[in-house]
Length: 437
Image 1 (cartoon, rainbow, N blue to C red):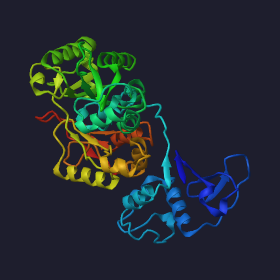
Image 2 (image 1 turned 90 degrees about the horizontal axis):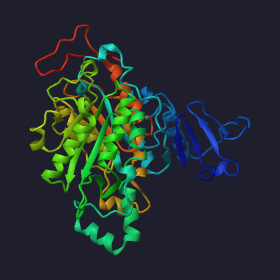
Image 3 (image 1 turned 180 degrees about the horizontal axis):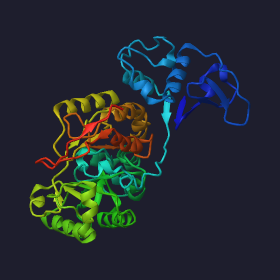
Image 4 (image 1 turned 60 degrees about the vertical axis):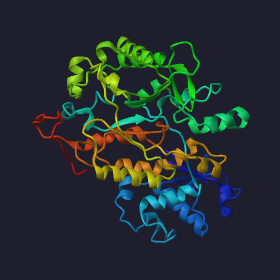
């Protein structure tokens, strides 16, 4: 079994007969050298079986520069396979990776991104006059699931079957619900510090709760209230005055008109002049000059019409797929249709269904997500931000602290090459072009 860890991979010697008793080996990318994790000297590569050689080749390939992979043509295999057609049914790089991942031979581990807390303020000046909806922004899907309440009731939106099973067999059903509902492990502050600039807030009011407290929800409710999190976001913004955050308020399970009014009043009271009105073209230069740091999209058209501080709901490209390849194909189809004019999200999150859960009784959304990340990382690196039909804007995923997801999305902005004199068009977008790199 293999465990990818930044630029290293670990091989479980028990899976290779020739390595039994030799201890855990650390393979270095492309160099075909290996050595134990301790201070032992480097040893030559052992001879392994046909299938194992393929798996080592896949692992070594992960450690190579990404451009060597993305430049492959359909029908070819990674260079490290030395021309061996070990998986003839795989015809594209994505299929090669997916087959190896689905065999369970590769495992990724969590790495928290550091150093991206001020990334917007460090963007080159040539990008300051480009609207945020033409930049690449990292986002988190179901942002608040790191604090789901194990003891809370099932959400009112869930099916009667789920509620019935949870009532009859809580000891069995509740752990399953938690495994497949948790999409993030970092707190809001940690996500922002990691570089996330789009927060997906699924807001709800608990049934039969006499108070006006609002919570976040994903099958079950969170332990933290919406108001507490909004204050937490404000505290972070006050220490990062040149960063801009998009808050996508969605779902509104159980919210009455009165609760909508209370929520909007709370948002206005907390963020005040930091809220960017929707009639402003949200470039970094404009928002810095006006002191705006927060864009709030609100998935309730009737309320948006009443408040200029609220932006319309941001479209989310949700593939609803259990397989990585199917998700990538869905995203490519959406790109062919064309991006929306302003903000939109390309969701790289996989979605389980009942059949998938039954087939993977010991699985979890986390395992499902981590297996998909190597393929999705390659897809991300191939994208371009901008106003053109096939361009991306916000890319949101689960477990955002893994596999340099945030860094990869931020680096897409280096592909933008605006002209020296950007002139605003009628829609508020700027004319931009792309570098060849």
